[in-house]
Image (cartoon, rainbow, N blue to C red; front, side, top):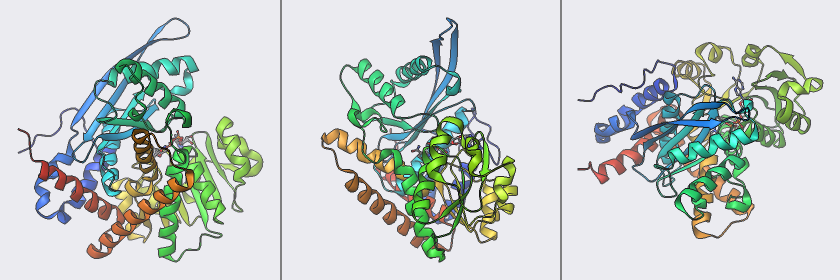
Length: 424
Ligand code: NAD
């Protein structure tokens, strides 16, 4: 008998509610391992920390921070850190759980974890951002470490923030622990190819899905929501392959151009002014119109819960590539399946980032660094092997790719759980 968790109240479309429903869908395919499934429905450990800092104007501000280690049956925790004003414990729990599934789906020797601070970093000076980062790192320092839990970048965090995290942790333990975070700058033990890895993984899995659908990427129309690290890199790679990026949305608004947006101009402008800064290159339209822009491929690469049931009805895409974590609510998943739209789920589609994070961690420990070609060849091979195995599972059971990914991943996680046994 298991009690419900008391500290979250998930709804059908909330991140944790979405995750629980995804787990429920895989239970029929787990065989005898299903007796262990409850272990996936609760995080192993969740830490809430107070992050007080002195602001530039002399006032004291407090921010709420989290680090959740969802599951460590297969290895140390792994997962990014998000700085966003809407971050909640429930969201971080779901993101950590998706990391557990993702690392197992690609067969990396990690569990799943995630962190976040409820803060709008755009309202902080650089000095305040550094203080928030360092105090948060020090607070979660009691549970992270190169062999226990390794953070990385996520929404609104980057290589500089990873450098501050690495330095803070190192100062506290006495030494230089490069392996405590991934996504670091290159000269601090970072890896070539890490910045583009997630977008590249979206492209590699998307290209294979398009091939299986008989869709030619040359001339294919693509709509991208979220034009940060993941969305912009994926868009560039698809454009290089001959696709047209016909709509892009970020937090500033939506820009469309049915002839294809000029990414060489849009990308640099978007970094300073957001995508609506490129008015000269397309039409600015209301945000909701993004979802019915005629397209062949839809790439949600912003936040969770964006692809709702209503938007799933509207889209003309035949293929959805989940660059973001948890962008599709369960009801939308069903609608897309009924409409014959193929979804490559987040837990495999955006796994390129954690895969190159794994390479970075391995390189840090061996103090021997690989060239970018080697990174990309290994990344493509791991992603393709994982995707092909998942596709075979989907074909065998006649189930969607998401359920197949969960079947492959949950079997690995629960097998490890069973073999380890329960302590005491
Ligand atoms: P980022 O901070 O670089 O970019 C986020 C983008 O989303 C920005 O363009 C921002 O303007 C846009 N955005 C924010 N709120 C929005 C809204 N309400 N509507 C439309 N657009 C909005 O973040 P990122 O690293 O690209 O992450 C994007 C997604 O990909 C997240 O779900 C993240 O968890 C996931 N992800 C990231 C990585 C990684 O390596 N960075 C790896 C796996 C998954």
